[in-house]
Amino acid sequence: MASGIIQLTLLLTGVAFALLPFFQFFRGTPHQLAAIKELEQSVPEGLLEEDADWFQAWKESGYDQQVFMPYFKQLDNKTGTGYRECFSSAAAMVAAFYKKVRTDDEYNEIRAKYGDTTSVEAQLAALRSLGLQAEFRKDGDADLVELEIENGRPVLVGWLHAGNMLLGEPPMCNGLGCGHWSVISGFAGKNSNDPEWIMQDPRGYPEMEKGGHSNPHLGRNVRVRQAAFYQRWQSEGPGTGWVILVNE
Image (cartoon, rainbow, N blue to C red):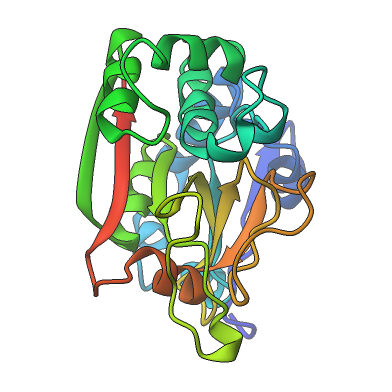
């Protein structure tokens, strides 16, 4: 292999097909998954090892994985206090992902029965009332979040969104409360030099370096550098990120 990269082909009725066009249209449908499984069983064993040339080439630019889910904006909440309801709108996205609610307003009515929008206990109770398993942890790190994403589960994350790090300020709380909640729904460039999180932020576009948010309409599928987010999320050191893990 002069290039060091193996080009696999499918042989069907005597005609060779390149794989790339097939995977460009991959949507994870049952018949596509079944076809990939059949292909996997037909591939020589050596090609499925981690040190295979094609896999090493794949890893050089990292790889992406994303859980596709609904998105809600906190500022249009019917309560009129959406400016302080990031936690509820973020939790509502996860509840809607599991098809337990249709809107964040619907979720907010449920959450209000258990306490204030800023209360972790109220959010956990609301999610559990919908038949979901919900666990609050203060030991979050990249490995934990990536594992959840790889298992098809988005993750609620709490982090410090104030403080302009470009001016030497540390991540901090702001006047409306301590911290902000959003949802990590994927990652990009894993194993690369500059990996990113794919985030659903109910407040809009998060400015990781200077703090706060800018455009309130650009919070969906935002890519944020993991290195910058680390400082705001694991602000007390490695393995100190706030997360809520949700599962059925």
